[in-house]
Image 1 (cartoon, one colour):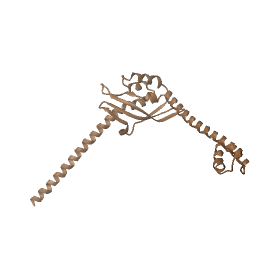
Image 2 (cartoon, rainbow, N blue to C red):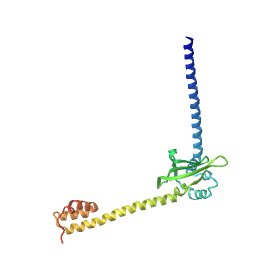
Image 3 (cartoon, rainbow, N blue to C red):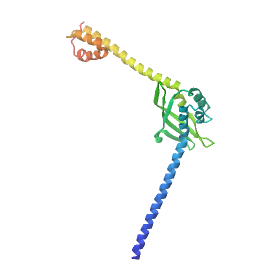
Image 4 (cartoon, rainbow, N blue to C red):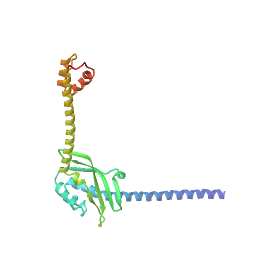
Length: 227
């Protein structure tokens, strides 16, 4: 009886020790998680501060987001980003894809950004921030291409290129369509087949669409063309 009681008592002790160990490990993991989360927030702080300062028109806040080493970038930000009336935003998630730790005190973060004004907006463009921990213990941006892509001048230039590309594609399509339409009109005039007059009107009024109808319904199955 005494032996059974000892075994039962030892089991209780082992269970209690297991619960205490699990609680201690959980507390340690939670503490590490909170510490890691805090470090991430510190690294992201200059990017967050930059966007907030830009949206508030706070030039001092914009400048303070950058390291003193980044004098050229600070100059561009001062000249090209003041008083634009543009709302900015960045998306740097998920971390496993956007976060690259170069050293314990240097991290490269790749984000997508949006910029919106009253007359235009762009979104989904990629940018990067090289963030370093300086001697005062504060993380600041030392390198980026954000200033090359996000200013109103650059945004309008990007939109201009997009419109030029789209316009070129449409011009190419309509140019080729116009040539195809002329070829079908000439073929219709030269070809002998029933309802020829009707098809001439279809080609004139339906233009390129009429040319495709003519090609598939008449030309591919029509009679011989007049010599």
